Image (cartoon, rainbow, N blue to C red; front, top):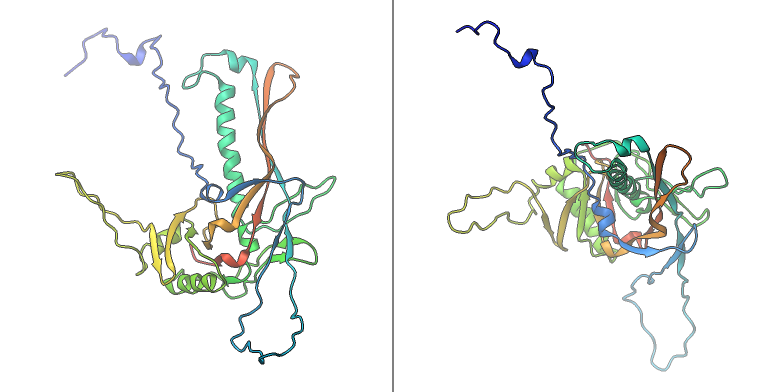
Length: 320
């Protein structure tokens, strides 16, 4: 068929209105499972401190002669631990003209950017909290940096060849970063070994936190709880291919994927032993007006408190 002569087509038209949706799609992840798991508290200075104590080793040969006199046994003192607060911020500046125009998908550009910045700031926090970074005390021209989850754990660890633990250095008062080793496959044997070590030290690990690759690996372990879902009436059946609960000899453990922790590390955690302490909680400050723009400053100053690293463990240096 042929188009009749002088037929107006859209390709030559002038003035067709745009068809721009008022929906702005954004699937960038911002869930923060480790931060959500941790207890929340307040700090009173830049280097908050806490104490941990322990019992002497059990002695089944403890025996005393009837009527014998006694002398005092040696007793220990608690250990003082500390971390450094880290100040994070995100700044937004939007021109007054950008605020005045009629933009699709939002009533106000400043509000949209502020909301986006708040989500991004939380992902920065999650990345640092779960990381393998050392403590930096900071100074007049140097920002303070907190020691993350991987750096604290030094007792119940499984590492690849050449890997080494970090941990709290009581001499310097700083948390040291671990050394990465040669990567190897994540196996159920490695997981069971670390869970047992954590339990032996007195922990009650209920969370296994892992990146996406090793979450899928864990789904194939023999200790995964039976996966099913009841289907009411004639509803379509649901097939489950994910593992949410791992059952070991020492209890049930939720497997929690984390997009912002290092994918090469699986953490076995006792949640009650972790706390995020704020010197300054989340703030949104309106900055002084210096021209034809509006500025906002979002910030938080916080640190990670590991009350007892022996209650958790890591399987490090895993292939991804």
